[in-house]
Length: 315
Image (cartoon, rainbow, N blue to C red; front, side, top):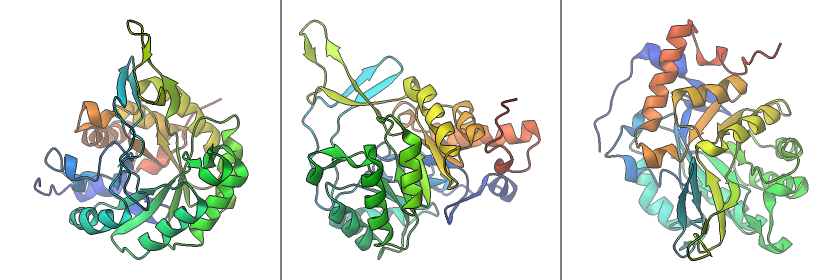
């Protein structure tokens, strides 16, 4: 474990935010599924410097995920079809939470299930784990009871699952939205009405890659989720739309590789950002983004990050 780096109080106060009741030192979080359970990056960076850690998605029971090949690099990003591989709730609480609790960085657990009852059970059991600061709900997974339709593509299903989760926990609930919809604002309003404390977006875009020599798909599942710089303009547009559709905090995700990328989302109205694919390319990306945002505030003469949130000039 790397030594704790004490950041200066001035920098701390300049970047600190309240996100749905969770106190963050800065607005830079790591995206679920790209940072493991934190242990994988602890020897490469100081986890205390992060705004928050969002863990790999957790299901009630362990999951092996999809067979390989399940990651392919593409121009401007990558496509993954990991299949939500994870250790399961019991092992997560027993083996992963004690390690994460060593740090003074809020831990937000990503949860997913194939039925509303699974989400409820996850929320209920994690509600009893004091080290967990909040829950991020992955509603981009298929609803088994509805024939595999994604929870997040139907406003009624999205509303139902978030409402049931809110009834099962006192922790802040962040609804993570899929971009694979026609009208994302209607989904955002549905989860807000259901009691979501914040919204994060976007999850990956459906995509595929083909090997022209063998004429076979490059992923075992044929299609997967596209992430990385290629999706940033799309993610930025979705964040702008949702910021203007709801009153709860919005967290921007999608192709954030540099401080400039993060600032674009914040200027569009995001209260915080999540860094995902960049972690695979540069394990210190989050630290560089935090430092870059701080430098921007100093350069522009802003006293606090909140002055930049939603500061887009459109006239």
